[in-house]
Amino acid sequence: MISWPKQNDVLGTVNRGNPAESGLCTLCRADCQGKCETWMASIAGRKLLYPRDFGIVTAGSANTSHIGISYNSLRILGYNYGAYGLASGLSDSADDCIFPNVDTAAAFGSNVKTRVKLPIMTGALGSTFIAAKYWDSFAIGAALVGIPIVVGENVVGIDKEAVIENGRIIKAPELDRRIQTYLKYYDGYGAIIVQMNVEDTRNGVAEYLIEKYGDQVILELKWGQGAKDIGGEIQVADLNYALFLKNRGYVVDPDPSIPAVQEAFKNGAIKSFARHSRLGYTDLSSVEEVKANFMSSIKYLRELGYKRITLKTGSYGVEALAMAIRFATEAQLDLLTVDGSGGGTGMSPWNMMESWGVPSILLHAKAYEYASLLAARGKKVVDMAFAGGLAREDQIFKALALGAPYVKLICMGRALMIPGFVGANIEGVLHPEKREQVNGNWDSLPRNVSEFGSKAEEIFAGYYDLQKKIGAEAMKEIPYGAIAFWTLADKLAAGLQQLMAGARKFSLEQISRNDIAAANRETEAETGIPFITDVQDELARKVLLG
Image (cartoon, rainbow, N blue to C red; front, side, top):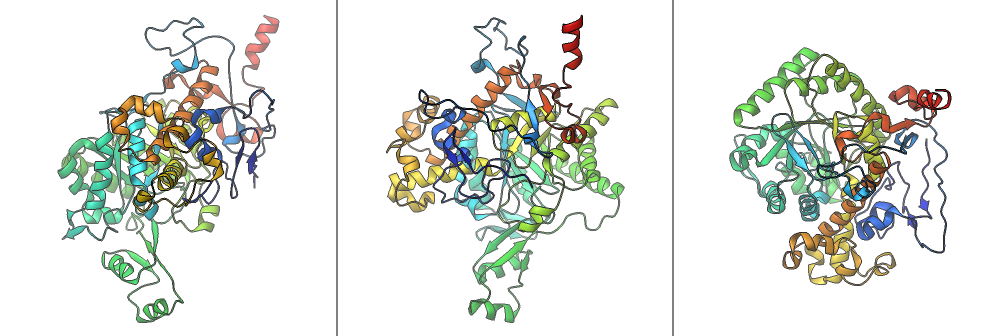
């Protein structure tokens, strides 16, 4: 297993727990007092791109060893001449070819293009309670930044206030709250995407959404995710709620309707219940049957009125990946999210996460290979998003390059939740009357925060930038978690701009697989990305001998 350093002295960051390849702790806590890179960037923004203590330090890279096959074993290439993809009105002079002029805007979709200001999107934020608690921060932050956010599965099904009669939703207050919070700040960039699984299909989520919101909402079908190979889970510590979920049609473990289980719960031997979703396609046994069922579902959704439909698939084997790419292409879906193992979770079984599925970089490499096969046959391949343990700007660039030209977005789950936690905790301290409302966890500002200041205007590097966009009066209504979200996104955008400028690519569509190299032969063999000293070797010899 590759070991990642817990501490980065150059940036002044430390992981509280065991760090994953993404740079996030394997267990990310809402009450964390810091200070991993993503946590710190939610406050300091683009300052986290640079070494600390300028003027009294020099810094040297520690990333000299590339062991095994991972995104860390890809290197980003830079070039010493040229400029590609400059916006209209810009020249190729040194005055115009500066990193702030790099355009990070993108678009995805088949017949209807969805525009985004930054090529990232959130992971699915569904029925886990942490998604509900911090939704305002996540949704408002995503809308202000101009990126898509995904409402995950089962939101209606677990809502005690939702009313479902004969497979039709009569009332869905939590789902409505999530959608309307995002749409309030939506300005034409980004999207609200609602995911649908087996239970959601039975509960009539698709019909409810199209009738109430029309084409304001994108519908996402879910085949799986990178964290697990079974349906979604949550944990509840209330017997009555567990019984409610069982009566709603969910699998609840242990079964709360069994008298012995109820007795064990009342006496403290059982303290919680796990609610599970069902597996899809269990009544099908061949690729042809899956395709027929899938295409029939898409046809039905089109007839309902859906103009934009997406699909998310997990880290199954490569047959499932090939099915997802081909079926999504033939159905003219708007996006296919390919989520590799190494992705995040609210409550997936831990050893399942650790031992099942295809790791992200291997799955993503195959996605490119299979997409290229279809493209070679003249197919317009579905736009894709790559997901699974990606959190930093360098990982965004590498994943876009690995999947170019098919990959338009990078899906980031836990990384984009961290600013919501950080901001809510700060707001709860500075405004104690709001602590319960915003789900703040701190009694006082930790030193990691107080060293930046004692007011939001001082603490968040992105405060005034956001205020410039929406105005001082509107800022009064923005949760601090959304300000932190904006601040982190600014760091990711600036970092991506710098990497792109170094590669002489001034727009996202110019990024290609030629902009990365494999740092070891194993990675070259599995990804098809050439070994670093082989890249441009022929050109170098022409320079020398030509």
